[in-house]
Each structure stands twice: as structure tokens, then as C-alpha cells.
Image 1: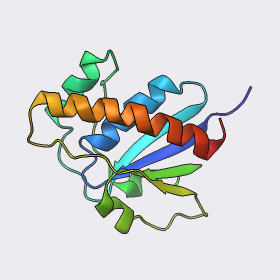
Image 2: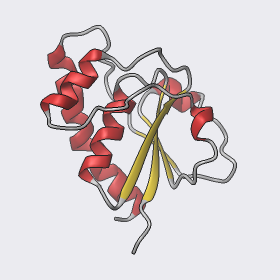
Image 3: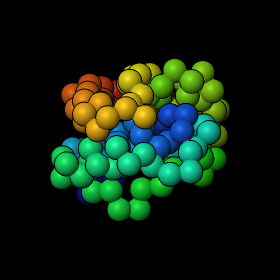
Image 4: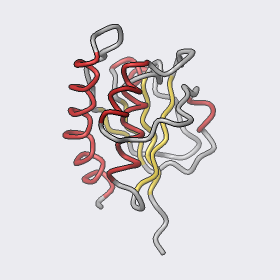
Length: 137
């Protein structure tokens, strides 16, 4: 049995884009990729709009909580995806070399639910193919 590749989706607050990306990758690439998400400056909670946008797509949201990147530094990560410019600029050095790609998405924080849904769909449309290509799956 093949061990899934591990992808870390990194953002600043780990409360919206990276959380949605984690849920989408874990659903769409189940069995091939295990996604984690973290933030360089995590917020206290996941944005309600992100949770609702995922729920509307039938994706699980149980246990979603912002995490600091330090919490995942000991994971065996195969790919880091930064989804905001700030996270790209402050991406930490990992214990071993890890390929990194940057794929920025609009931050819908403070906007109506429709913005979160648009970002969710953009993440699905652009991130899934990018992760597949980067990992060769």
C-alpha cells in the first residue's frame, strides 16, 4: 500500500484559505495526499464563512482549528503550498529541504458568504491540479 504524500498549506492566519484548502485536498485527493494547514500568525478561530462554504460543498469541518506552523514542523512534509504573499515571505526553514510552491488566493475575510464560496471554488480549480503536478500524482 502506498503511503500518501503530505502537503502543508501555509497562510498567515490559518483561519480561511489554508483551512479550506486542507479540507478540499483531503477530500479530492483522499488516499493519495494528506493535507495539513498552519499559519505564520494563527487567528483564534476558523472564519465562519470558510466553515459555511465548506459545509455547503458537503466537506467536513469537524475539528478545524488554526494552528501555528511550529505545530507541524516535525511532520514529514513532501510539499509546502503558500496561499498568501505574507506566508510566502515568512515561510520557515524546515528541518529538511521541502519543495514549495506559491499559489495566492483572494482573502475573503470580512466579506459575504458568496466571496468565501468563490474562493473555495478557486482553490479547488487551481490548487488540486497544482498539487497533482508538483507531486507527480
